[in-house]
Length: 84
Image (tube, rainbow, N blue to C red; front, side, top):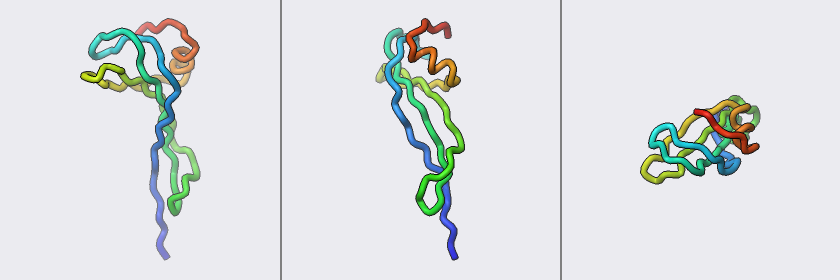
């Protein structure tokens, strides 16, 4: 009997947030994503293992990514000013 298992990460876009990039310094809109990794058994995603929030620079020459906490992501989505 074979047991097929693994992990799969799905990216869920949450919206655009206003802040400055920590690499290129460009101010403006940045994309906010939620990445959820789930344990899969026989190609069926079952249990969420990890969830993280990522902010990605909209500058096509930069495209740097930075992980933020859940509370920071909620604060950014609510429109509160950022102080990175």
